[in-house]
Structures are given as C-alpha cells and as structure tokens.
Image 1: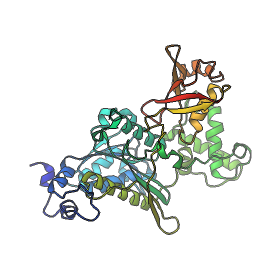
Image 2: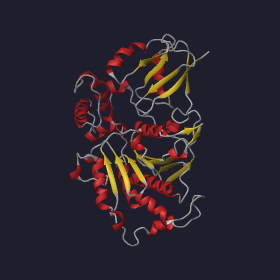
Image 3: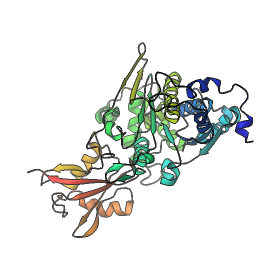
Image 4: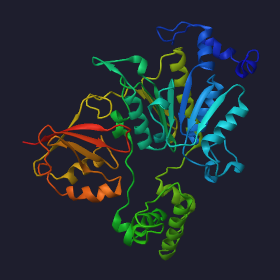
Length: 438
C-alpha cells in the first residue's frame, strides 16, 4: 500500500466524491460518475504549475487540497523579504532560498499524500519531452514573454494529420493573472480555442515617462529611478561594458536605488525606496493577496473540471475587478484566423519597396499583435540560408547590423519571400511572407 492510500483517512474525499460519482445539471454531456475519476486525479493526473509567487502559492495550495497529488512547480526566482506579505508558503528563514523548492517542501509536509516536485529553473531550460508528460499546465506568471513562450511550447506539441488536429496531443493551459485589485483567468485548449497570442492586444501597455521630464524636470520618485535606469546606467556601466540591468540581481537594484536617492535629493523629491526601485525596474504593479486568492481559486476549479469532466470548463475568459465594489464577467475570446502562433498560416508582412530592414525589425517589435523583443531574421536568398539580423549574439549582431539601413530588395528579398523569425517570446521560429505594396 503506497503512502497516498495510507494517508487517506475515512471521509477525506467525501465532498469531492459527491461531484465525481454522480451526474448533475452542470456536468459535461459525456460525464459518467465513477470512483475511477477520483483515482485518476489522486494517482495519475500530472499538473505543472509555472510560477511559485503570489499566484503560484495559492494555486499549489488549492491543487493539493482538491485531490491533485502529482504536481510539479517551476520557478527561477528566490525568496525576498517583500514576498512574505502574500506568498504564504514562505517564512523569514526561507529568504534567499529558491521559491520552487520551499513551496514544494511546505505543501509536501502539510498535505498528506501530496508529492510536489520542484524545478529551480527557467522554463526555457526544458524541452518538449518535459512538457509533454503533463495533463494540465497552470500559469501563475507576471511576465507576458513567459506566457507566450509556454503558449508556443504547447502549440509545438500538437500533431496534425491531413490538416486535422489530433486531440490526444492537446495539453490544456490555464492562465491566471493579477494586477492590483484586477485579475483574470482563462482556459486555453491549444489549437482549438484562442491562444495567448490571439489576444495579445489585451495586455496593458507599459507606462513610459517623457524623456525631457526624466532628464530635466523630475517631479516623482519614479522619474529619479527612470533617470538612473535609462540615462545613468548606459553612461557609467557600473557592472562592466554591455552588461544590461537585471531586475532579479540585488546588486543591480541597490546601485540604481542609491543613485536614484542622490537624484531625488538634488530636486528635493521624497519617496525613493528600495521596493519602489525594484518595482520600476521590473515594471511591477503592487500585488494584492485577496486578488491572488480569487484568481488562483478559479484556476484550480478549472483544473478540477478539466481533469474530471464533472462540469463544463470556462468558455473561456473571466475578468475580475474589486477596485470599486465587485465585478466579474465571462466571455469567449475568439481564435484569430491569422494568429501568428496558432493559425498554421504564415502571416503576411506588407512594406513599400523603399522599406529598409530596420523598418521590418521595428514592426516586429512595435506591432500590437506581435510585440517581439529581440527578433532574429533569416531567409533563403539565392538558394542559401542567410542571417539578415541577429541581436542576441554579439559577434553576429556586429556583423549583421550593417544590414539594418539597407532596403529589403537590396538584401535580395522578393515578393512572397518567406522570412523565418526567432524571438525570446516563442520556443519555435515563426514564418512570415513578405509582401510589397503596389
């Protein structure tokens, strides 16, 4: 008898059995109540939680208490003092330890029979074989880039036979997000429903301060921090040439904090703190524990419904707002026929014949539907694979930056040319077709 069975005292799952062993008015049409469903959830179903922060802690707790025993959690971050007000799986003694390991230890010790396996890694450190082992993936992330990468990974796992999607290759993705007193939860069935990139324009734009205000007339503590981040860091290069700002490196944040304090003192501005500095550097919006709890509960509920089919899953996007009163709304986000990630159709990029490669790069970065970070562009020209621009590798960037002011036609790119674009927002390269405006 395994440890999970030993820990199942009489009546432990009686409330869940009422949902799983009989049908009801909200049940899926194909649902047939059976004790085997609970057995599947307890002993077979594997769930991956991406992120062990404010949302991730709540999700782990909810899954463990709902009958999910085979849980993996992945997070690249370590515990900071500022996390402790809402990430309740951590204590003062855990500061500087990695979140995934501490969260797993806490849940394993607290919930009998539950096995949480931690991964102190970046999501990009694992390949398809790792993600293919899970039945459900739940994201509790604060990064749009990470969401898009997971979205791209699950889309890459899909198999099509004669253009028809094989449903056995679908791994459902549940995505939760919070922003102060606002939040959302959604269910994505890759290849069938709207994916992250289908609704990329829903994500709020980042707040940018005017450069003239930052440089000459700062009025807010945020202006002082932005001054150091945007102007002073490139000038002084405090940690070496070409070393960018890492918001997760305390030494980087401390340097920016101290310089921002000096700037604030010059203009008699109050309110520059280490926590605010960290928030501005990482574009963090203060988290609210109650919002995390609500959205995590919705994510866990959707996982329960998907694993058991006892109720129809969310279709497919829920928004929550308790800024002024309490408001929730559910609607169906529509799958885009020309989505660059999930449509299987190369998207056309239209430019006039005088356009240069820099115009193409700027479009890939600034387009509301693409929002790439460091696009690397290759194409087949004259029967040979040609790297037009690659910013991520310094040696290649120096060699290919000479192409940026050149016209696309000058680089040998013709009408209908296929462009292969790689970016940190997706694990697989995307294919575009070049179109010249007449």
